[in-house]
Length: 502
Image 1 (cartoon, helix red, strand yellow):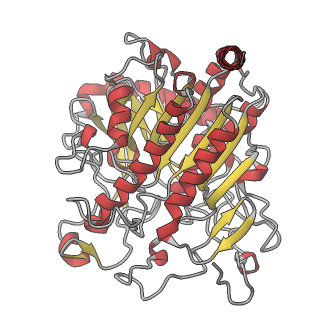
Image 2: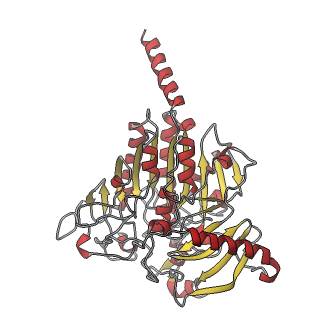
Image 3: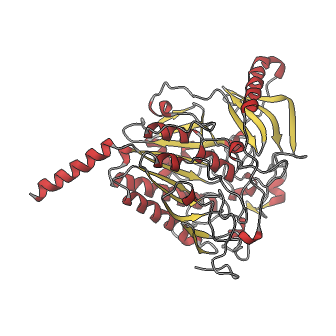
């Protein structure tokens, strides 16, 4: 009888899983480059669980982030909208391109996130890892902008700000971590200041795996945003000193292990065949940080820039039994597409009162002959439209300064950076060059953006792009910029006035 009851229970659970919408998991790296993975061509990076994910799923070669820095790109992921629409940009020509620990603003409450959208279909929603979309609004403890207020039922170990240069606890670059920028939360409560890097990734994994276990019979959405591979470089024992690439390779290997634990959990609970997993990065690698920054491979530029190296990402979609394993697609896709695609496969209607820039790429996931839904992609740096992708072409209206030829000599010793440094951070000012006519490249034939096309010979292409820009700007309803408003009284502090706890 016990055998019959067990068999009936297994059958009942399997039947209920078959009837419910699929689970959705987003694994989101930080400052991770197009050329950082073995499966994307890195010659010495060790093969790891993320490469296995690529071999078991679909690998994209023309996937674009929503922006080239943390805060705006994460807003684009969660809302499916360009950051200029959600206000996740600085005002005017200010260069506060990301939110800080004392920022007063955050992702607006009326912006609809993937989590909020999927909750309408009965999804359990969970977040662990980096947030970087705001913390406090009026007091140092109100947590008004944290994930719990944007549709996430469960928030485990999280970094509301980031893991930054000032968090270095190795003694290599800083004598000690700066507590003002280094802190970890559980949900809306700060519990560790500064961050303990040795414990960080295991804690993130425990919380992510625990969330999956707790909701294995429910449809769920998990947003796992890694602290890797943003400076400061760190790794837990077992990864330190193991990679041929040094500290960056160690850090990446730890991130891949964490992703592998999530995938292994899905498989062990028989959830893999009903779970769509996306892996990608928020923006390109911080190339000015020598060997402690990632690799954009043959792509020009990196983090903070609208050259390909700053916005073209490695990306993988995995769904056993649904997505043909080992496929590679050159169809154009965007991180903003995750919002729309998740809604499509979950059977949720998109909001109709806002403009959504993402598109449904589910046909690309399942059909080898499917084409990109994007005629144009608009690439911004803060409030400035920098470049436009159209078919194989990319037109630059503005470009940022690339690292100078001698920067490795001036800013690096034995591959180690002297300090946190950006050459092409600005969206305005003397380091930005305007191009009229636009600088045009065929980025399929020339992904390095090395050989500009003769504008006189491509007038029809430039005319189509110009018309699309005119229509885009005419319809654009940007929200007032929200970045750059700070209040020192909002400083997160777990043990005032010392701001130190474990």
